[in-house]
Amino acid sequence: MQQQGFILVVEDDPQQSESIKRAIESRYPQYAVKVLETESKFRLFVGDLAKVPSIPTMVICGVMLPWIFPELVTPDIPDEVKVGTFRKAGLRCWKWFRQYPCFQRVPWIYFTILDDVTIEFSKHADLLTGYVQKAGSIKPLFEEMEELLTASGPWEATETEVTAELTASPEMARRLREGMAESVGEDARVLGMPS
Image (cartoon, rainbow, N blue to C red; front, side, top):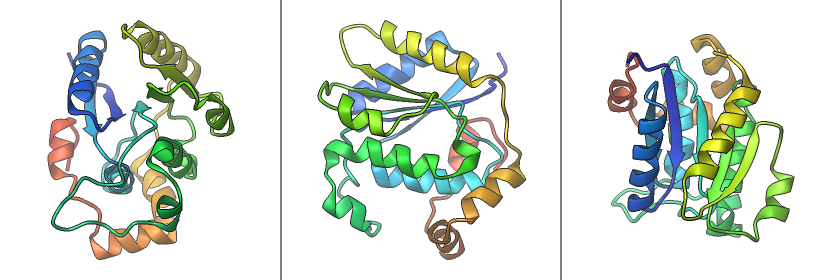
């Protein structure tokens, strides 16, 4: 089957992310699934989309995410992350993602074990944002995915629109100029896109 796009999963627990990935690939074989584990990798990957003519079909994001796992070289920690908490990382990711008009129509699902996030979540929502509490079954996630995919309708941004929106941010333009964003060659190959 020809893949029609990709679903981005942001989840730091490797067992959960692999389980979610397998379930989505089984239910939606028309979509590739890309997994990111940290808030910083999410931000960098979104910046890399300026180099790839594609936008995620949907984002499924945990709420509690580390900024980064210990590595030899770590990106600078933004002030909002320093004063924030890992319990709100997914909310920051949503806000950062939605600042770009080219990502306004991408469905987003908060998928978390937290049940006390609903008040904070309501401040970070729009018609294409959903919330599913992790439970024993993946069925509620699939139901929310169906609802949001239907609500978003068909839409595809051009490479020019993506590049213009992403480089409009001074911070992203600086990252792209300095080559701080990770190379998307491997991601593009996995997702079936030109690199």
